Image (cartoon, rainbow, N blue to C red):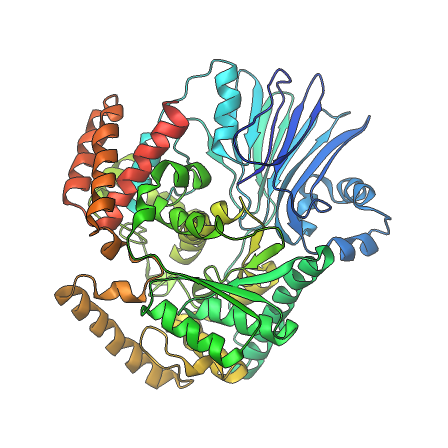
Length: 570
């Protein structure tokens, strides 16, 4: 996740690694700032300093032109100054897009650091010795901490979170005393005091006054506008529009919306073995739409599972490494020069649908939800009061959105893709998500409204099955079909261990059977597990999980070992 690093300790050296990134810096007696970003969308990425302020914007801001008119300013430099002057510390709430940044008020000696509404651009930070250290990558922060001789130790609670959920919940990271800034939050560091504030949080406010037709019309309007904003940003820089494509509904909807806006001039890509659901459905969609460019890559051998360290270097273990390996394997063979913002379909089904399987009013514990693995769940719960988050999120649904969705799923693809270009899911547009949270739970449950939206507005997209089921805009019939489909999947999983892999873009169960890949993973485990000697109980649990776990659980163990080697033991 290239971006920036900064500290109120000015005696910090620049960060450099093997990546070919743009590096600029501002050095003051009371502030060090380094921009370290990819060479794309540079007019959106600002680093600026004068006698009164220093500020930096990372990522892409879709509504710069709207804000320039609203604040009657001639350029982005004056715009940000004006926004800070009028809106105060939380001025970033006016931005829309995938962004992060900082603003330093020199006269007030106040540093503000922020991330976007969903934390799409991660920010990590640590306090030490009266100074603040901030980075868009964890290794940026540890780079600075090592320079001042600070101790770098593993956060065992975060380790158990990773081994249980596949990611880390809330603010925790693998490194003790290094925290993550959650989406919709900003921090203020002034006179040696650190405070974290919320400038935006989604809320569930059901509105039962709208008809289904009105809801579907509004959904479609907001979704189209979201895709349009990405198209306009790519057009501004002369970049190509790319979308991921699979058998899933989310990437399908992004692709059809993009075709509606730009016609045939866009690109899509699929990473899937030939004959798998993602390959077959994607091919059918391409054949139907007949747009300009389609790239398909198949990997049967699972050789990418050997690339443990390289993959973790890019996603820092924020999610299991195999997903990072897939994207790294694919994008490194492409000519990335003209690839613009990738239109992903991240978490669309649960934004229009829901993570919850029952109404929040009936849920009194968060234990047992959203787990990738149950084996070490009790060890995690013993270290972390997860039910204490019920009050913060007012139920399970928002907890799952911010953690499983924003901290988890969005950390699977985005940190890797952002090493090549910018990314954004049109489903994560603030206005779109906010509207979805006004749709009553009973309409979102079992993605009934989602299916009706597709059938009504994109009937061509509804012709292709999803998880073996044809989309039908009849709620009662949908319930029956969904129930039958769940039973079928459970039976397949029970009697055919790898049957579900044909519906997966990352068929890790099959890849793990490759002798060469399996040996490479075993060798990595055996050569690294000794590094956990300082954490005896965790080490024993990791050995047990690796020896007796499924391929995903073993991947979680290898991810943790790689992170320890990269970020902590270094």
